[in-house]
Amino acid sequence: MNELLVTCTALTKRYGGKTALSGVSLELGRGRIVGLLGPNGSGKTTLIKILCGLLQPTEGAVLVDGQGIGPYTKSIISYLPDRMYFSDWMKATDLFDLFADFYRDFDRTKAMSMCASLGVTPSDRLKTMSKGTKEKVQLVLVMARKAQLYLLDEPIAGVDPAARDFILNTILTNYNEEGTVMISTHLISDIEQVLDEAIFLKDGQITLHDTVDNIREREGKSVDALFREIFRAHNIEGGAF
Amino acid sequence: MFGKLLKYDFRSMFKQFAFVWPAALALALVNHFTIDGIEGSSSVGETTAGIVMMIYVAILMAMFIIALIFTIQRFFKGLLGDEGYLMHTLPVKPWQLITSKLLCAVVTTMLSVIVAIVSIFLILPWDAEAFRQVFQGLDYLFSHWNEEMTRAVFCLLEVLLFMLVSLATGYLQLYLSMSIGHLFNKNRVAMSVIAFIVINALSGTLLSFLPSWDAFDPFASGLRGMDLFQRAIWIAIGTELVHSAVYFIGTEFILRKKLNLE
Image (cartoon, rainbow over all chains, first blue to last red; front, side, top):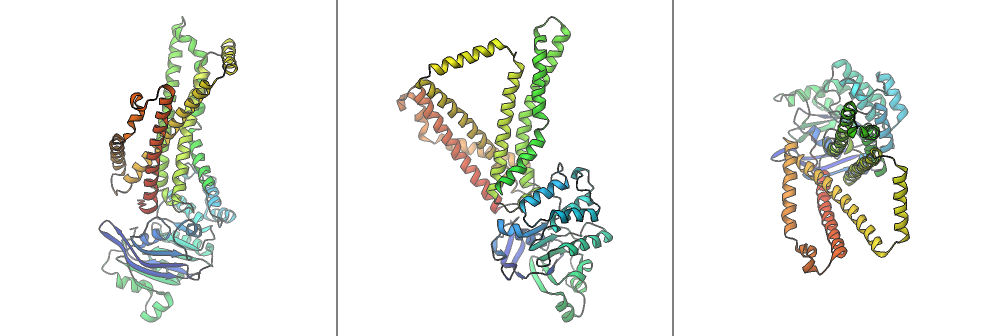
């Protein structure tokens, strides 16, 4: 097992003429809860997609647990995208079968008990479920794994404040404590309390990466206040890149 | 892992065809009993038989159209649409994703062909005397077996192989077209169609440069009959395989290096 869980070196991603990430270098350890913070279009989703293998960087290198992105890293990463990814004919239990087949770290019993506590009936067809219920199913799939790295892309963006607490609580009570959780969001005040580290992403570059305690001590203000100060000029209405 | 991918692809295929295949067979069976009405004296029987036959033909056509749509959709939606977020983060390699989809599509089409053939036999009159004659004929054939017949069987198998390889090539061409289409941020379907047309034109142009056409010419090659036929079919199979390889490599490269999910 590699000491560093994530190593990005001079990562750049360009879409045509547009640069989404520019020279991002990043190291993440284990057992951390990391906030990937930045306004809309700052490159959060791009970075997460590169880590889980949905995008190839234009330049630079990525290692997860010491290995390049491939089947091994995918087997230890649990990814929550910012959209629904299943076909409608399936039931939640079909998805549990699929996850149990492909991911050795998927805990079916845990998934069933999470469904019970979230009020989801896993034998229902996804077609008949509301958008909110589908999101819960997806959260169950992701958090019922004992993954090394959880990549959660805007898990609380589209829901009301009460549901935010609910989702955060589900994440915090279910993640593998030896693993690292990376949560991307622009809603910092909601998650600041649970973060160990914060990464500020601005125009595709990391402008700050430190522990939350250090930030508070050094700046004399909360991460949320600092974020607002730095990104004041930006529209921080959220959404994926 | 590859076996597990196949399991899920085949499961979604059976969901899709769980109604169509039994429906085609059931309608063939109904036709078996009503078909006599077509030339019968009662006009009611004639009309019923005509309608039942039309429904059967429509179901058969629908079956192949659904098979084609299924092939396209399982790739376009399953790997290049939102479902791609799930499929491309599974711990598998892109070539395994493509191969699994391709195998499933080819088997789906073959099963549809088998269902169509079986359904035709279901419609035909079940005549004990006719069956007896067929078996007698086969018996005669086997008792007078010679080299020519062995050769004919090989030719038949070669033709079947050619059809199978062509089918796979066609599907891989669709896959490559859709992969190229998905590279664009807008009008992905239209771009896929254009890509398909361009690939067709390119492969036609390249083929016309091949010197191997002589092989099909009885005068240039000096071959006759079966020899000529067999050589031609193997050249055709080889050409299809080269196409397949190019399409597969292109698709795999795009999915591995250029994936561009919305």
